[in-house]
Image 1 (cartoon, helix red, strand yellow):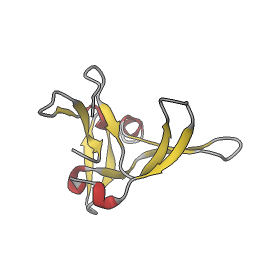
Image 2 (image 1 turned 45 degrees about the vertical axis):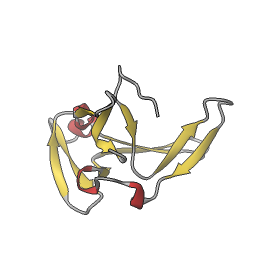
Image 3 (image 1 turned 90 degrees about the horizontal axis):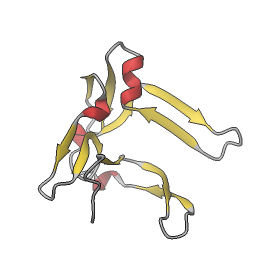
Length: 112
């Protein structure tokens, strides 16, 4: 699997929309909790917002950097193992690099 060495790639836990690179068609994918390798540091729910498109076909929940606008300079997040914690600053700003040189978002990547 390749990686984006310029911008951290993110693979949120749970489900979400994905665009097929070959034909541009969007589909809704599901990730099972058993696929999460580090549930104690993987965010499932956090402070932010939920948006629904006017025609009701898509729901988007923002969490991560948006949380700091709710609580000054950080936000509260529930991890997939059940505990919650406050992450100061931009939660999406916590990044790590794996042994292949791929960057990923520490708290928003289910398979690292």
